[in-house]
Image (cartoon, rainbow, N blue to C red; front, side, top):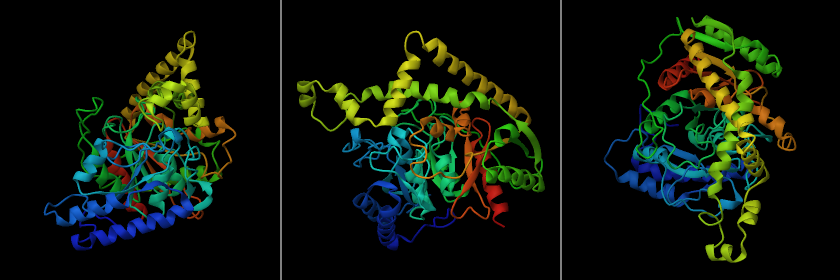
Length: 464
């Protein structure tokens, strides 16, 4: 595994190592369906290039998988959709460019819910992702392929995107770590937009330490994304003494699976024994979060996906589309059921006569969430919730009930609405090997490094 304190591999053996990584990707693909494309030529050429360099790079030789809604020059970027099944990227996203500059190697593009709309990676045109811990279960969504390929050990880190929990929930279901940075911490240039005020690129990895290392390579201002921000510096956490840890209100945990309830009780005990001050029953607007999120994200998605009109992207020629006047049929046949559902919902809440009733109320609710979050962090340093109310569910279990699927996001949408960083960590119990569960730690806006330091310290204490 990659270690920041030493090179991943010696330069002379790098191509061999990458070849073995690609072989493992193909082997695990047979059971998990975690990849949409495996980039043999790109990865091996990059390894050969790195073998010749004399420059010391921070992530030298680190194999990375990339969610298939993040552009990488010369690779397919399908977004898990039939509509983009043969689209080839003409440029590389800022986040990936920065990883490449630091010595990373892209080995493939990972499977996902179509256009990042889903909580199970079952809406992909390329078939569902299967959870490597239990192949009958979902891997979570929408970054299910990224979480699954880390869980198999094929790569130590993969990129995902998080609009309402799409990094953290699959990380939890697969028993790995997933980090959603503050909104604007990492450039969104090159990420295919879902909800522009919510989307954030982030890492899924086998440890919080590696998440932090990869985050440092990607973080920073970008002139091509005017929403990017500077992140506060911090001193690494060496003790939890005096750390103020808030826990979500018990009323929200009461409806969870018994394992989740027990996890939250044990976490209180664990953090208290480590010296933290526990603050109970905090609710910074959770009751608003889920409906608010689905109104805002669907509205933004309906606007963002209007660009897919059959002219600028897709599989048919412009002349053919004009001649047959098939713009509406193109979208109808190109988009899957979940994407069409959200486009219709978004169009509805933005339409004349309904925008005031739904969309503007959701915007107001979001502002209340942001203000209540700021007040909460006046008296707490971090805030802990479950990632999901239950472990991973069976493939096909919720596909016929969209509302049940949406409720999978109960604990994750809040961080996106509040624009704050959150990290999902696995919780170890006697059932976690086959059926992982996880919790998430939140921190104030721009306190990403402080949050990662807390996560690393917890990880170090927990693994003793």
